[in-house]
Image 1 (cartoon, rainbow, N blue to C red):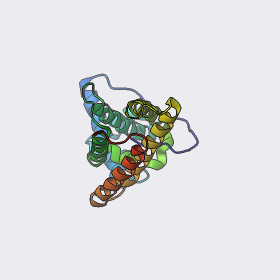
Image 2: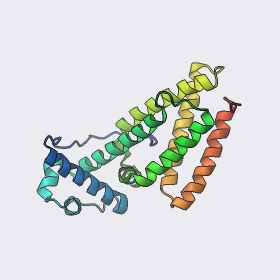
Image 3: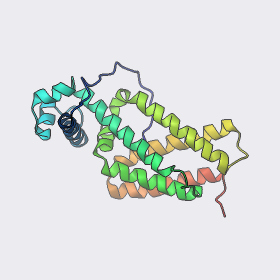
Length: 215
């Protein structure tokens, strides 16, 4: 889960082609993984196409076969990070997994903290968030989906809220959480965990104003 910022949209740079053969897909994946590692460790500016090729153990020609330039590689890294975010959210919303909102809040916070720690794609995107316009469209669409789902949950937790108010509260929750996770991800794990605890308290108290804790 990431946070939308106001930036001027620019022309997108897309990959040259999607691999069809299994061997090509493996090479493509190794290039993306190598790029993510470099973007996460060194940053976008210090990463080179030659360095990506070397880390992936392939030729520079193979990198350019799939990606016309470095921004196109970064867009694929960001796309995978957003995909991982969506999969994490979906895992919390599986049918039959209804639970009290305080429990769900704890799980959301913990799972997204772990995602930011474990996913090199996510770390690469966060490290280079100044390139937000490269993945803004996908991120915005995902965030709107999250907001709609949270608004539906709020309508069950706090039935007295109007649909408009539920959507407004959901939007505030989603973007506040997203921005908090973005800041936490740039801290050490120890400091991040401390901030995560405080984030849970903040969100819990906000939700309590509309939906008292069950039981």
